[in-house]
Image (cartoon, rainbow, N blue to C red):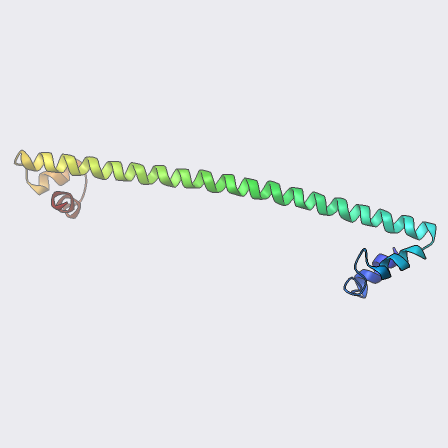
Length: 122
């Protein structure tokens, strides 16, 4: 505990990274109880890191799934809109060929005059 306290508070990680010669010397000179406490804290920290990595992985996968579902929904909506436009265009052109005016076509399709004119031009 003392070693981890020193490492955290004094920012000795940079000076004595885990696995370095200095850390090994410090650990070698610890009492049995201090070494046990150090090992326990390292194990606890490792478990915490693994748990956090697992949570990050799950959150990332959930985020990806949400993105995929949202993309599908948007694609379907765009497809429906495009289909509606194509249908309105065909109907507007068919009604025009049968001699109906733009006002009548707009009323039948439930769209604006501008949209009717757009469909008839394209």
